Image (cartoon, rainbow, N blue to C red; front, side, top):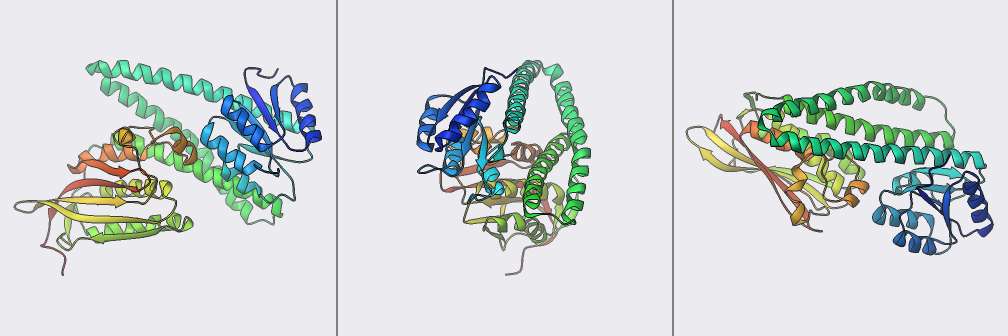
Amino acid sequence: MADLSGKILIVDDDRDHLALVGRYAASAGHNFQLAASGTEAINHINSFTFTVVITDMIMAGTDGMQLIRHIREHSPSTSVIAMTGYSNNYSYTDVIKAGASDFIVKPFPKDELIAKLRRIFREQSLLNNLRRELQYHKDVSAELLAAKNTVQQANEVKNGFINTISHEFLTPMNGILGFLELLTETTLSRKQQNFLNLIQLSADRLMGLINQLLDFSHSEDRRHRQDINFQPHAILEQTVRAITPKAEEKGLKLSFHVEHDVPTALQGDPSIIQQILNSLLENAVKFTEHGEISIRAALEQKKPPDGIILRFSVRDSGCGIPAAKQEEIFAPFSQADEYLTRRHEGAGLGLAICTRLVPMINGRIWVKSKINQGSTFHFTARLRSLNTSNPP
């Protein structure tokens, strides 16, 4: 039995095929609307909320790719099934990267489309249940936080849950990635290679989310800092080198600079500093489409006899953050807005991890940002100087 609470929009400028897909949907009991052009579809989307949009990719005027981008911007919760052909200008990878949830190659049998719709409606139902469950847990957490004697217990339960679930996901994900690597060593057709690339892209994204959840959980458990000797120049160089491949994929330039008055040898916990810098750089690369990202280390203050406060800054030329959101983004599972969350997928934990780690180096973290002009994230660390300063 189809879920009649969700409505489907079917879009195709081939009216015969449009009617055929409509009959397919009707045969499964789905509630649907037809649109004979991308422009007509946009008018419907601007007026109603659809659970699923099934759209052809090659259409006169507003084509399927433009329509998908409009949906992702104006109706991010709507799932999209792209109807493609072997001769289409758009590859499967293009379609998925643009924001489609699935694709189907024309001509296709009714059962294949119905199966995809059934899966999407089931996922939407699970997602709605998860949202309700998350809201319930959010309400419960608010009540627990109001009672001081249960705050610590609530945090331990929450982090234990995240840690357990993340590890449960991690084991099968490692298996998936391992078999994907084996598949790449076999002879594949062009179509199979396209499918494999999509699976690899999704698996890598999911693995990144799992690792971020684990980092978030471990950041709460970490109680003590280390005091070891390190060189700030080496820390910045290592951090930039690690993120360079991701930046180069987007054509971004990376640079770092250590001010001349920063001591060349310090004592503190470089692992915490590096983890914070990694999170800030990951965010900078994610939200910057073109331009440059830079890291800077500068002497903020001297604390005699040998203490110093060092300020690290990560500057990007990305989309910027609205002033009203600049405090909220440091909370767990937060991004600047729903559109950015949809466009730049992620758990929204990077800055929350930084916020937990900064007090361990006796520092603070803040951001300065303007819309369409980029952002600069600053954090400080209290360290011990082992020498004077960098040579001129």
